[in-house]
Image 1 (cartoon, rainbow, N blue to C red):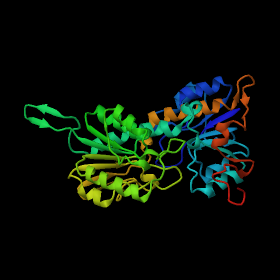
Image 2 (spheres, helix red, strand yellow):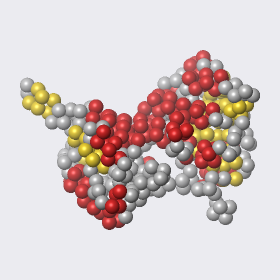
Image 3 (cartoon, rainbow, N blue to C red):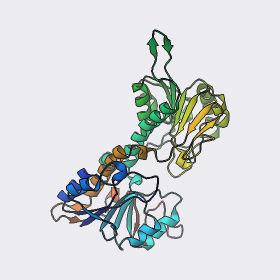
Image 4 (tube, rainbow, N blue to C red):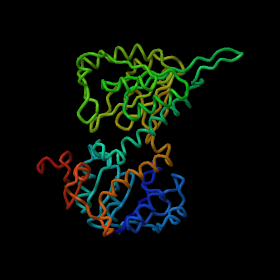
Length: 376
């Protein structure tokens, strides 16, 4: 059983799919571990630390039985992998049918970590939560860095500095961490979400909840815990409430994403124009089209009175921490695929975790959400 940790080839991806700690755990499970040279450097892990943990170093890792990555492999990487290899990564499958077909055609068995079901058993494998948690924290730090004033109220002999007002739009894992971080920094925090269950969570963190609480709002959550897409009527009412609120805010952080769809537009150009001079908006959904009109992926832009922050791969801006959490997510998932007694790979193809995350197997795209229409 040979497990390989690939080096990320995308220029803006500093994370790595293993740490010395998880390498030791894989070794204890009976695996031979190979790490691509330089794979951990951008996350602060030198090759020597992987070697000390028991891994061997290699320039190429394509001959492994299982290959661990952060991002979906490129066409060039796929060509170097042996047929039948298991590839596990954050695959970004929505709208990337050609890339999935390429993995299927190469005979790879691929798993998308972001499709992990949100059930109790899989909490320790939930990459969306582990990475969003750090993104929410970093969003507040990035917002504070661009904001030209202090965050907490300060009473000094020279006068009082008022506390910054921060508005969080979208109260998932990222939003909740953003609220907690902003509160710790001393800001006055408000938050909004279309899911009624989030109101209590927001208030438990010491923030104020803002939403149009009508009948549609009371039924605005899917069984999986995600936000439903709201009616045009509700969106208009909520937008009017938010528009009035945004005028008074110093920092706005948007985190709203719906799996498989473009990010909903929450902040219009008119709302941006209404904000106070020196205000900041951080758009965490910019990679999916953005929640904010005027956001530019990968850039911080001045739009009227406000700066709009559109950093890509925000978890990667905390590469050491996000790599450590992601590596543990992978470890706990892979642990379910190993026969502890024989110390061999023994995938249970009927396991609900396997079925939920497997994209390709035996030369075909097998996930029902991504199968070609004729096959489906």
